[in-house]
Amino acid sequence: MSIKRLLKSFQDAVRGIVYVFKHEQNFRIQITIGILVIVLALLFKVRRSELLLLLLLVISVLVLELLNSAVEKFADVLKPRLSFQIEVIKDIMAAVVLVASFGATFIGLIIFWPYLFALVV
Picture 1: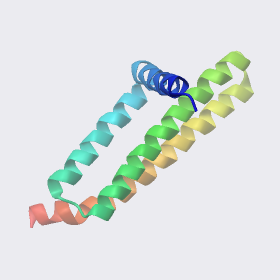
Picture 2: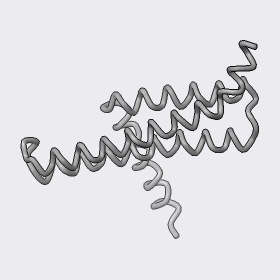
Picture 3: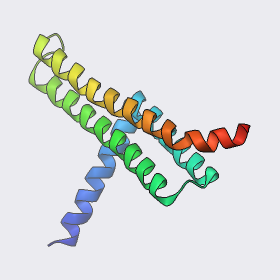
């Protein structure tokens, strides 16, 4: 095991995250929402298990968006943008992120509902 290679791997990974952050609006939106969710969870003092679930959901959506971005870039290299198959692949990957985002939102609402309700009552 080489420390130099390990550090290079981390550097490459950070460069990938920075690239997606700079070039993908949805990733920036998802990071912003993720930070907001975690801040709200800490402010509401949600249970540890709820916080862990929220963190897992935020990380999952971000990972899927990174994967979506990678597949889109790879698809662009393989075929021109006008290819029907590439368009379908990109649509499917976008759907993956959308389903995960909707699922995370739904679960987040279930977790936050009692805390929000307690504020108004």
